[in-house]
Image (cartoon, rainbow, N blue to C red; front, side, top):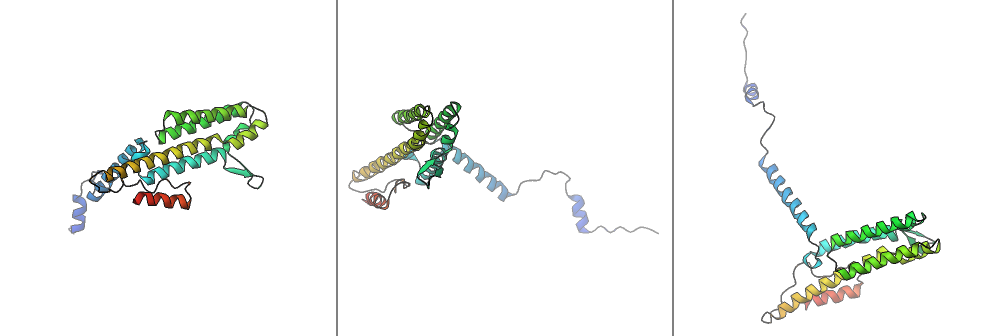
Length: 218
């Protein structure tokens, strides 16, 4: 009895499919991949910018908040006596005799270098931060009392305050230059570059923030 074979179009199409496992990437996938590469390149280039006058406000806030969070972990993350005394990881490490003091200096210097990678701070501020670290180290060498004073001194929080104040002043100066350039351009006041107002609002109270907003409109 002769065998009858029935080849359906489905089976024919399956057999005609190439056996190669490498298939062309769809157009929408290629577009998404290209956009992802461009975004990655822009993120890398953004990290290389350290001048606070050239950054958007959101990026400045992001960097400052990250630095502030790290300073809190080092100096004031924990509390005791109903919050009257705050201390951080560096204070706990400093309780180890001799080794703890050097470990604290290492943490403080590492934090200072992180600040310098985030913002292009001038040598004068770097010197002030170095002095704070040196005072923190020398005081910490005194047994017991030195550890208590070290907890109160908080060198890393002081260094954060220095860089925060520097960034705010730089952005105020840049915004003022934009406004002056607008007044000198035929009497036509130009809007500041995007991201310059309001200034960094991390420690601004409501009154100061309102003043800053008014300055940006005039």
